[in-house]
Image 1 (cartoon, rainbow, N blue to C red):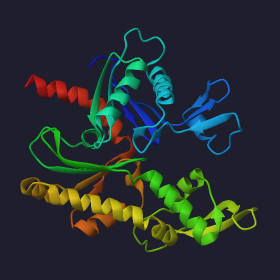
Image 2 (cartoon, rainbow, N blue to C red; image 1 turned 180 degrees about the vertical axis):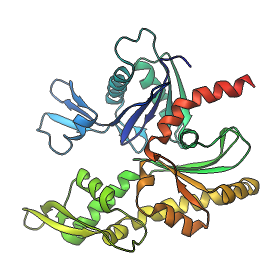
Image 3 (cartoon, helix red, strand yellow; image 1 turned 90 degrees about the horizontal axis):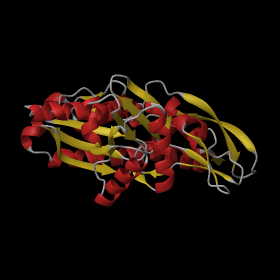
Image 4 (tube, rainbow, N blue to C red; image 1 turned 30 degrees about the vertical axis):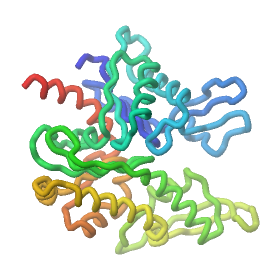
Amino acid sequence: MAASDIGIDLGTASILVYAKGKGIVLKEPSVVAYDKDSNKIRAVGEEARQMIGRTPGNIVAVRPLRQGVISDFEVTEKMLKYFISKAIGKRAFRKPRISICAPSGITEVEKKAVEEATYQAGAREVSIIEEPIAAAIGAGIDITKPFGNMIVDIGGGTTDVAAISLGGTVVSTSIKVAGDNFDEAIMRYVRKMHNLMIGERTAEDIKIQIGTVYSLPEPKSMEVKGRDTITGLPKSITVTSEEIREALKDAATQIMETIHSILEKTPPELAADVAERGIVLTGGGALLGGLEQLIEEETGINTVVAEEPALAVAIGTGQYMELMSKMNEK
């Protein structure tokens, strides 16, 4: 793997770039702000995220990926270009080899779109890796061995659940319920119960501060500001972690059902391995409070959150190339 090789976790919520020998060189939200009139890009990443919900008429802040799929091709391409040149620097004389990550349920058409956007953004060679495999490598699992491992990767737009063995997925599925759905559920709940309109960013803050899917021994609470739906004026209320648990119940149930269905489809030998080795949680959504306890209680299988779960996919994508070349040498 030459020095100009990079791995990209093209996420719905954030983009991470892993460069060989340097580790994670870039982690920014996948948001682009552009001027509608001149079609020029005004800001990308963190700077653009600050603008969500606060832009004047001619500037739009968009997330070009929705639920793990490219919804705006041109903008995605420009965003990739920006992040790639930022990661490898302007002076790189060779085009990089890029391995990029896609959700396991991706269709051929969507795969082509990701490849095309990466080539347009300046790649010499593109390889697409299934997300659960990358997540497993990043979580430190040796995927080349003939043992079953179960990965639950909860990102911003999709949750991937897979049983993995010998460097490939045996059974896997991808559902479009993940971090963004948690945020939306919180927004809906606060609006319904407290007549308060809150934005995406506030909902995300609530999720990070007091979000949980399992009853806490000591409930937490936080103050939330938004717009009263009745008077139309700004107001602030206090929400508790117990309320948020109620809000997230449906999304959590859908993820649990997916884990169940994959366990049912897993061949018995691999299922025995999973029962012994446990379930590994990766992705930013794995940081949601009480998730491992909930999965453990529902499945009876020991569940652990990977170290630095949000970085696992990007690290795995970067290391995948090295692993594959090792496997091919044997």
